[in-house]
Image 1: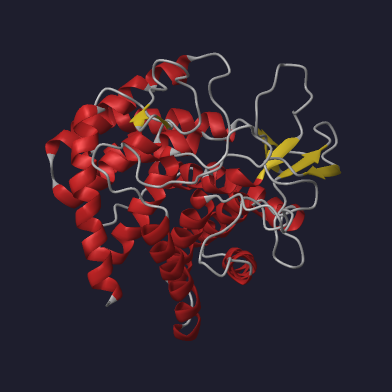
Image 2 (image 1 turned 60 degrees about the vertical axis):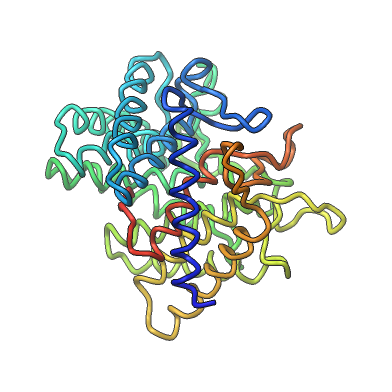
Length: 373
C-alpha cells in the first residue's frame, strides 16, 4: 500500500477514535489507563511532567479537524496547569513538555496573550535552572539536600525549544544562549563515540567538573535506554532547526544511526538496547518518538540521506500500527506496550505521550502537523 494512503487511513482512524475518547475524558489530564479508561493527573499530581501531552493531542486534533471540542479541552488543560506554575518546586527541566503543547501552542494558533505569559513564565523558570560553571540545565528538584543539584539528563534536549521560542518571542538572546550552551554540553558528555547516549550525567554543581554517568531509567550504567536515545535524536534535530548549528544536525544523525542499527527485526524496540538478550521488554514510546524525530531530521538532510531516515521512520510507524495500536473505541489509549523505566515494577502499559507522538508523526506524513517544538 502506498505510504500516504496508509497514513491517511490511519489519520482517519485516529480522528474517529480520539473524538469519542475526548468526549468522555474532556475534564481529565491523562497519564495512563486503568482497565482501559484514562486516569486523571489533575486530581492526583498536577505537576507531573507529562501533563501537557493531552493538551498537545487536543491541539493537533483541532488543527486537523477544526472541531471546537478539541480546542476547548486543550484550553481547559492549560488553565489547570496554572496550579503547577504556582506550586512550590512544581517547575523543573520538563517545563517545555508541559507548556509548549499547551500555552505556547494556544498562543501560536490564537494569539492568546495569557497563554504567551504562561509560556514565558515557564521559560524564565527553565532558564533559571542553568548552572553557569557546569554549562548545563539542572534536571530534577530533589529534596533540597543538594544531592541532585549537579544532575543533568538527556530528556532536557526536548525542552530546549521552550527557550528558543522565548528568545525569539521577546528578542532576548539569553534564552538561546542558555539552550545552546546546554546542547553543547550534551554533545560532549551525553553522546558516546558510537552514537549511543547516556541518560544521566552528574557534574559537581560548585565547580562544574564532570563526576560520573548513571544508567537512570535504562538497564544500567553504560547501557543505552531507548527513550533517552529517542529524546536525543529528536532534541538535537530541533536544536539544529532553531539554530542552524551543524554540530547539532550531525549529532542527531549520529544518534539516529545508532538507533536504526539496533531496531529489532520485527520493527519494534526494547526498553534498552543493551538489555539482556533473553529480556523481551518493549517500549513503544521510544519507537514512536524516534520515528517522529527521524521525520524531523529528514527535513534537513541531503536527498540521499532523506531516504534513510524516512524509511526507518515509516518502518517503525507501520510496525507500531500493525502490532501495538488499539483501535477499540471503548479503550481510551491508542499505543500499547509503553515502558517508563527498565527497573520499574510496571512495564508495557499505555502512556499518554506515546499517543501524542504517534499522532504527531502521522500528521507529519499527511501534512496536518501543528509544529509545537
